[in-house]
Length: 87
Image 1 (tube, rainbow, N blue to C red):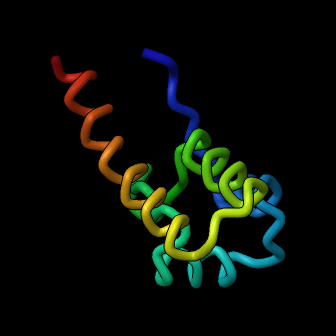
Image 2 (cartoon, one colour):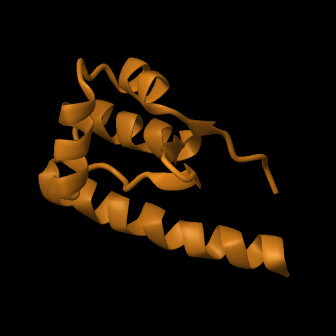
């Protein structure tokens, strides 16, 4: 199993090219960006491999519906990752 790196908002914005946190959260609400994971009482972040996958999909020309499908798959993989760690 590969290590999972969690990115905080500044790194997510830098890697994906968004100017503001509001832009990222709007994409989350729209279903075209993964939900953040809780890493502390008031702290969230995003798995780096999810941010990379979304960036690659955008470069590859994915439309909104395709991005939503990808996000759904990435969220499902979180459960699989947890199961693998607990096994």
